[in-house]
Length: 195
Image 1: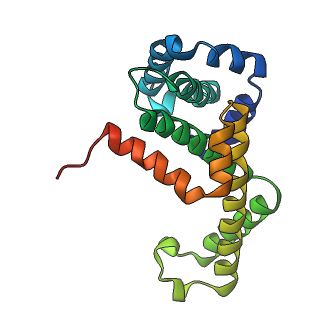
Image 2 (image 1 turned 90 degrees about the vertical axis):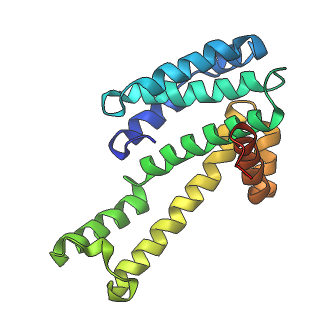
């Protein structure tokens, strides 16, 4: 996961990847899978605390390209290819959500929630039972969750389309639960659960 303090820079860098680069790297097809997989693994091996915004953006991009090159690969199950695509989209959308949490209405709400927590003087404020939290804090929390959800639901199909996964985007928009079930199916294809 991208650290919140880097999210804006990471998302900006990801979105600045030229379409021509995306198309050229995705066009490698199956032959580019192993090289792209190695890029992903190398970036994942970098200590998180040492990763720069550019490295996080390259990781998100490489995950999408890995998903592109997995499509139709004879050695990769279609369910696994779908899983790779879904994970790339969700992680990039989470980055967008974290970036949005610093600006606009969501940023204002988050700052007000922080002020409420700080003003309470209670180090365990977040551990309180909901019934003990101020009503306006609960309202702000609910509104923040609504906005974050809207950002995620908007970004997943946009990111999928940016990387050429139009069918995946259409499925997400038509039936998010079915999309998530396909992502999970790919996970269990990779890592079957015992029994």
